[in-house]
Amino acid sequence: MKKEKMKTEIEVFICNHSRDSGDDNCAAKGAKELTDKLKKWAKEEHKGEMKVFRSGCLGKCSEGIAIACYPQKKFLLEVVPEDYKEIKEGLEEALKDIKD
Image (cartoon, rainbow, N blue to C red; front, side):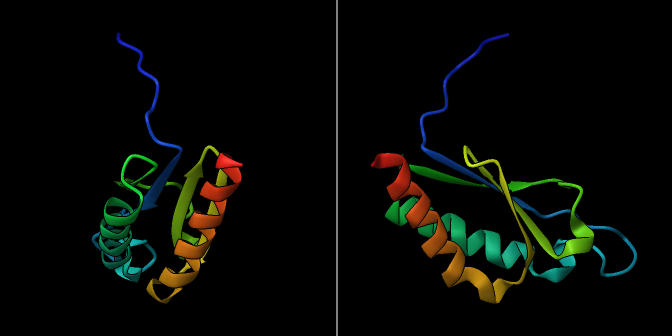
């Protein structure tokens, strides 16, 4: 096993879990669209500082799209794709707090 320190300040994991039946999962609620937009933004605006990952189930699908943020160890729940701007602002604020 090899251990390596993460190089970015913030890691964001967005659940993209999909189930065959029903809409009680993050994929059915627009997680792919949101993940793609946040990944593009982070790469263009905060490369080396922030990384966005598409994740499997975070165990919170019944609470809307689930996002886990590290090192803050916080969940964002009941997220919808329209929360994109608010999520960006929150991540930028968290990054600023880390740097201060």
